[in-house]
Length: 265
Image (cartoon, rainbow, N blue to C red; front, side, top):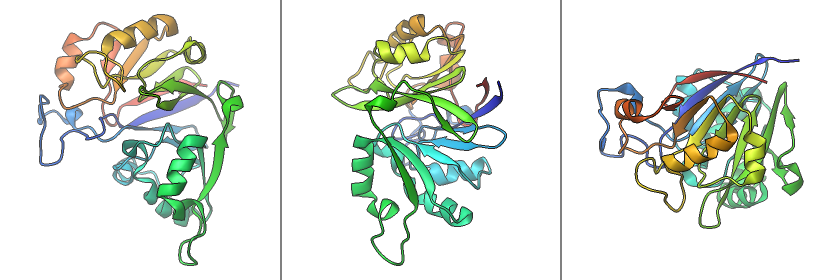
């Protein structure tokens, strides 16, 4: 049975955010609130289930801004700090719910996070109970439908450049592809037919970099995906929101923190 999802952009900035430390806005107009970008994350909600994708350094403030007090699960795209460094704030959620929080991630990300934040995953002291219930995906899980509560989704692998792999996700007619340099045929087949696609475009006007896509790459990929609307995320301080709106063709727009998209699943 089809039901609705509410998807909120918790953050759409790059690894340094906008403004950068010290008040550096780059080319962005500080008077426009849509230029204030925290680190990339989304909130996916049905009537009964709440899922977060990534817990970056701004995670606690993002949840407070959106009045989120409990979670059903966290999905991780990869282990880079701008996507995971707020993991400690899950302690507050876990304490409020009095149960461990399911966390879904691939084996590489699990190894990295359990090394860096071992107290969240393992009993290291009687003063620090385990916070997380770990669900590690293997190769057989990618491209297959998963379910958390009443939300079905499909995880898939993405090329994040220089040998790095990140995970993207499809939730019904919505696709999420932060931190990717390119997508292979398997990823494109998962995304094909979504109505809304969120695409990493950190190198929007700088040419195809080593870790992130530029706009021509996003256009090429969407020619295969066929999304009616593409929102660009992981945006740097060099890209002013209103200037991007004026430059982008129909069917493309910059994301902004707090943007809400309604999807069907």
